[in-house]
Every structure is written in C-alpha cells, then in structure tokens.
Image (cartoon, rainbow, N blue to C red; front, side, top):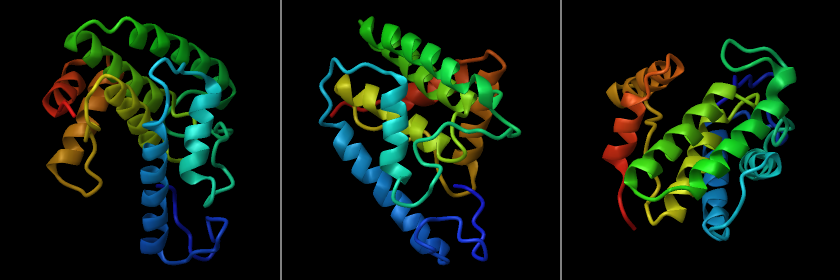
Length: 187
C-alpha cells in the first residue's frame, strides 16, 4: 500500500478513511482473482496482461494504476528499464510455465514469477499484490489453490516472507521455494 495522505487524497475517490481504502483495495484484488480464474490455461504472460491485472485491481482508486513506475525508489530497477525488463520477465515466465512437468518445475516457476516481479518493482505501488496474483494464476492453472505467501500484519509470517525475498535478491532461492512448497494445496 502506498503512502496514504488524508490531506492530499492519494486516491481518485477522495477517501480519507484508511480502513475504507484498504477495504476497496481488497475488493479489487478479490474481483481480479475471480476474473483470472476465467483465463484459458494457454494464456501468455506479456506486458499487457501485467498492466491489465494491475489496472483491474487499482484502477478505480488510483491514477497510477496500470502504468509503469516513472520515479526512483529504494527498491526495484531504474524506471526507464522497466518496460524492457518486464518483457524479458514475461518471456521467461512463459518459458517456465510451458515446461512444467512436475512439482519441482512448478515451484521453480512460481518462485521466478513472484520474485522477479517484486525485484523489478514495476509499479508505484501494489507490486507485491500483483506478484501474488500472477503467482496464484500459475498455481491455479496447475490445479493448486492460491498460495498465501504474505501476511499483511506485522509478525513472524511477514518477517519470514521479507527474509525470503531478501535471500532471493542475493541468489538464494531456498527460503522462498520452501515457503511456496509448504503452501501448495491442490484444489
């Protein structure tokens, strides 16, 4: 979630109640999840899909929805490199999702789809939620339920998730892959 400034009305609806804004964001995620379940299994990752998912979640609330980040942040790549990096990311995600032949391949694909999206950090806000939607999309297409990788509230679950992402940033995929493996549940 972005920085909420009730004096600045960080949203298109002028909502000043943070709980209400959170509720609407959650509704956007849930509605988008439902629509993603309707995609054909032979869908292709591409820039348009990723932008559309982000826009579907946040488009009613924020003017930055469905647009690449144009500002520097303390995480993520340089803004000018985002469209090309996402195109490479999508190509690799398509390759990995199309060669899944067992659980290890699936876990590797889910790891890549989730981690690389958060690493690129293509949006001003909502990167983790977008990464989780993309990860869940791959899991669902392979007969698995949504993977609960992130706990919003502070605590050990959230700390574990952040440690796993930091380790993956440093080329250690074991923590995040373990989290994914532990959370895989067939429909």
